[in-house]
Length: 194
Image 1 (cartoon, one colour):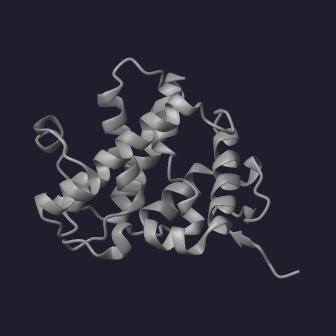
Image 2 (cartoon, helix red, strand yellow; image 1 turned 135 degrees about the vertical axis):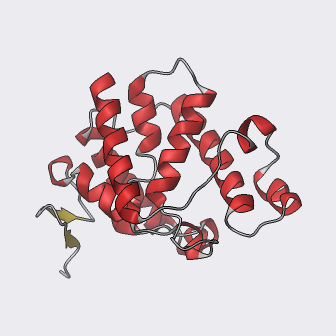
């Protein structure tokens, strides 16, 4: 059988086909996500807009939309794209073209990440939907602010959003080292609240 694992910087060896929670470290996730570019790198600025930065934004939007939500679900929002630290970020049309294989890998990694940090392997449907809602708002903001979409095009593809989002959430691209540090710090803060 061909190798299906990756050596992580923490020293862990993560089996991509059968990941276990003990081989998952937040430092590996934060590092990987800080270097994975959203929008296939097609964003304005001197730094790529990373999945780590996107995840921080999604968690902020999710918390804004759900002010009384338990900290563990905020953690789930922060970790919503965690599997991309080894799978990379593929735009939705590519995921659809690849088919079920990508979804299976993503689901296994997602479950292992959740278990590692004390979340249920499968999130409650209500929570998944609420995180997806925040994720779509994030994509809408990103599309117009940094990915070259016109307001009209972004509204058509991602839906219209109100000024409570466009005025409150401004995207500023930063070096991966800063984003990695902030992602790790936010993870620690949320774990401390649980």
